[in-house]
Image 1 (tube, rainbow, N blue to C red):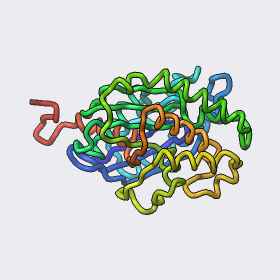
Image 2 (cartoon, one colour):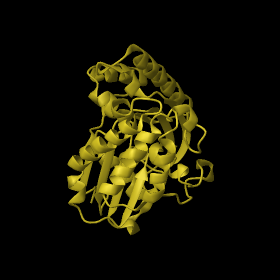
Image 3 (cartoon, helix red, strand yellow):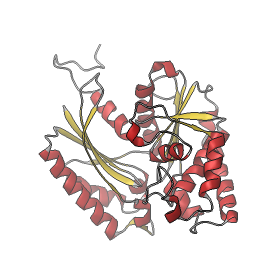
Image 4 (cartoon, helix red, strand yellow):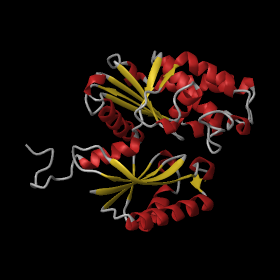
Length: 317
């Protein structure tokens, strides 16, 4: 079947169309996205008119693209920025009407579970006890487990956009402000990761999301045009060097570095500080970049409940 997924994240709003069926690798067919950075459209915890207008335009475009490309079913999900906005439900109702499907809101822990499913399918059972880290714009998700459903899944309000807005004012922020942000990040994270720390030690650690991909690229990993099958890693010692490089640079200066886009240049330092804190507190020396994340997890979860031609579903026995 041809399936479309709209993911309304804190940084990016993305339509991904795939050709997929149960038991097969979803094949991307069409991708359309905008870098909206919804956190910058929150005024008094309310999505402003400009943000709503941009989202509305995107949803209309997504509906037209889906129709043009023969999409049989659409799914739409929103994460932390909409989830926490005071007018979030009204915005969701408007967007759902424009997209032609209801927009579901994922709780932070559900984001972690769905992303974990995607990483598990990508890494396979040989990964053993798997730890997954995902830095978004509004939150950091962590999950660990030996099955496709994690044993522990948590969400901590330490997304790269949120940390930038709340803790790293200035372009660039002063060393004193960076030091204080680092302290706050670690205190917040230490309080949130106890379920992860209580779990069995991980055999494999992966990082998903654009933030981790950018940090790995800054640390010397292969560029995106090398393809998703190239192994990319991020070492904690290299990450410290990346932070030292980023800290004194303005957002404009960071765009000259490999892997840093203009729309995310102001957030990459915050993402690096969060990644470093997570790797430190979880005793991770090196992680591998996983190209599948939330969107792929949503697709896989949906495919798992699609009946086969004989009328039974994978869960029937």
